[in-house]
Every structure is written in C-alpha cells, then in structure tokens.
Image 1 (cartoon, rainbow, N blue to C red):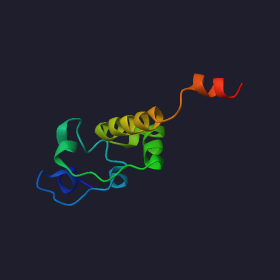
Image 2 (image 1 turned 45 degrees about the vertical axis):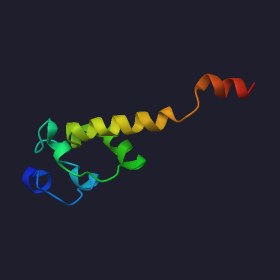
Image 3 (image 1 turned 90 degrees about the vertical axis):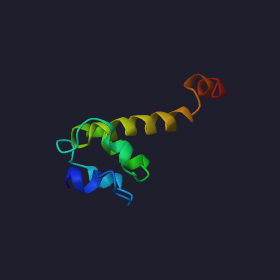
Length: 86
C-alpha cells in the first residue's frame, strides 16, 4: 500500500485499519488520518497495534491508545471490585 493509494484526500471509500499494518515508514506523522475515512477499530486490532506499534503509523497507534483507554474507562475501578469482593 502506498500513501497515495490509501490516504488521498479525495478517497471516498473507507480504509480498513488492518490494511495499514506495515505502513509506518510510508505514512508520515501528521494530519493525513483526518483526511481519510477509517474503518472501526476492534479490540483485537487495538491490542495488536499496542503490542507491535513499530508496524503501524503513529496516528493509528495513537488511535489504538485512545480506543483502549475508552474501553478501560468503562470498567469498574479496582477499589470498587475489591470492596465488593470482601
């Protein structure tokens, strides 16, 4: 995949996140991701990105961090779990 083929501002189709694996050296850090319609990120994909950030564009790694943080914020706090399990 090339930066031009996935990230042209006129690209109307949705780019699936998985297709960006291995494009870290091709896609620059910056606002390109805002010009592209990106597909949904699954928990498994976010985990893969966080386990292998060197394979993913920086903007996608940041998106995986935000995705995971949002998912974790929905979980009960450890203190409340400990209190309920006394």
